[in-house]
Image 1 (cartoon, rainbow, N blue to C red):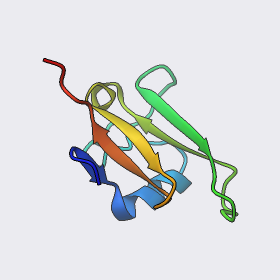
Image 2: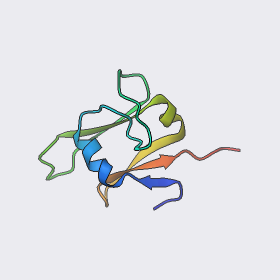
Image 3: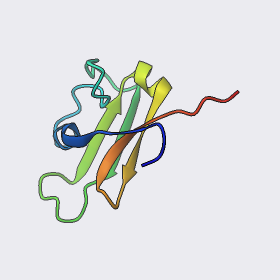
Image 4: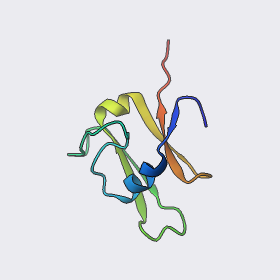
Length: 87
């Protein structure tokens, strides 16, 4: 796993299959209220996933300034990745 990457582990499956209700950062409790606040990540569900056709995760405005979500196809999970600081 790349430096600055944090695996979402067990919480990832719950968040992906749930409606977008809170920030995807497990350390943040910010609730989703409207589109336009933060970043929404949507992708097609993997083949064989009978629960959903699309999966969505949301980062609140504060977390989206520090992090991005990256999907690892091999591991079939999202990773929270910290933005690199530019000097």
